[in-house]
Image (cartoon, rainbow, N blue to C red; front, side):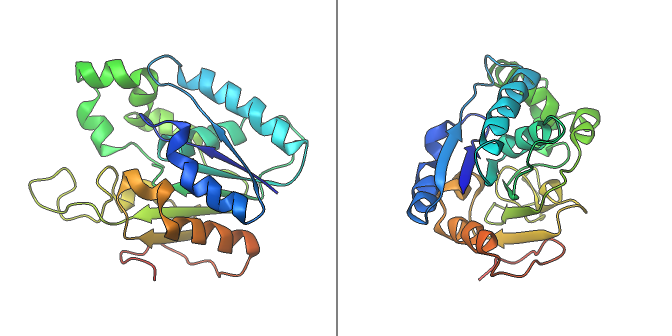
Length: 218
């Protein structure tokens, strides 16, 4: 089986190195997909990713893993696959927003944020564009970090969050398997617990849980 990892905004393919090494040791052919928000438009990245997934689908069964914006890109790409293309066996969303991200909404007019994130940063702040992506017709597991700071002085108040997105921002009715882990947003791809969750779902040895938990999974 193949695995394709797509990193988050402002990160690089190297951010998934530890996770992919663990998947490789478990027998998966692990690969990465890279992009740069400072250069590429969201639609351009999606087109390249759709082509890459199509190549995977022609070879063997595959799973997709997206961290943060990477998960948004994967949903858009899967929904753009040509008719008849083999769908992913499983999609894993690591701290990936399913609706406009609060921090993106707060920063969308900031000159530095606009320069670094360009079109992708504006997409994350747009309710219309985020809603347009929609769910995918494949099993989806949402991995939710819950180790973010909670305070009435912060952007999330006392909501459970991972430091970048809140539980509410990464949850959706169409995600029937959601797991909370005591990890901050940036470290989700390198978490041993996250790798274990992915491998258990692939093996089919762990039952799905409905609704996002607010306490870490043990």
